[in-house]
Length: 296
Length: 144
Image (cartoon, rainbow over all chains, first blue to last red):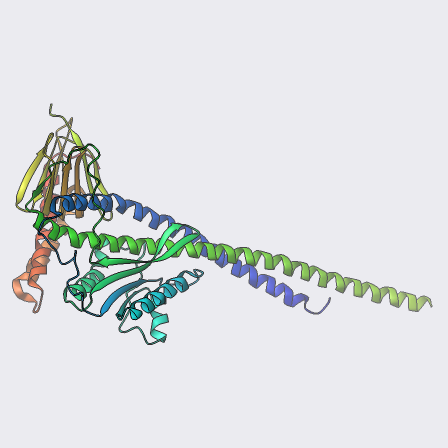
């Protein structure tokens, strides 16, 4: 048999093993994707209602004198903003983290040009590794949120952001995360978290008259509890969506890897067969040659 | 028979209760209040307490332990936005009262440097869960 036959066989085996792994990872990513999509859907009634309530309150309090620190810049002159960058803890998800990190760098450039410093809060190990190696990350990172994270798991992050903002250490708080469009598409986006951009006012009620809503105990007291909750919900949904995007990316990446491995196996098998055939032909020639020599 | 209306209890982690009800008793920030059919539109803050939902037909009351949130009463029905909500029937009474005891011990100063305010809230939440669990067991509830 020709030299290399054994080697090719070994390579085929190794590629097959890799293919098995990528296939399994794809399945896992698909399952996680489904679960976290379910979570997003489960939290949607809450956030939708919250948004509606906020609109109602906005209608009632608009034009009024009421103000809340979450609704306006409390420290507009502080030349520093906070950005929460969501990445993943694990790799092997295509360009998911690269895109997010690039978006973050673009954001930092923009802010620097505007004369503002950016402090990063890193959620997810990958983003942390990147910025740490460039000396831009201080302290530790927060483990990426997954489909298993509950609303309560966000508390440390919420407290961190609230105290930085309320303590007037930063003027604004931004979120950088991957918006989930569909499995093959997610868009790294930047969203301002604080101060809250008030949802658009409800159009002068379609029925032509405004419902008189009584507010208990008072509009001020309600906003006081509603606003923090609203901002937490926005944060929570961003974290969930980022995880969904991560798994979408991983699914696609692993699907491609599985396909590439399949192609490689086909190529290698062809090579192996050729080598085998060449070996057989060579042996036959030897025999025929030997027989001819005896005859002669 | 009193007419019923749609009620939904939602949390960030999902919907906890959904269906029709004759009345809802809500732990408002300034005390408990009831909502029956035809209530005026309202948005109210909610504290820590037990939410009781009376369903039509059989005399059934579902008790839900809630902590913090909002109630929105509109023409379409009642929506309760709770930060956390748990069906009274699904709370383990023994464990709930154990955690209440723990919370009380923390407050009684056996441990130094604790956040008093947070410990008090924790105790109220624990006591509330225990109460909801007991209430749920003392009354006929629907199977959820």
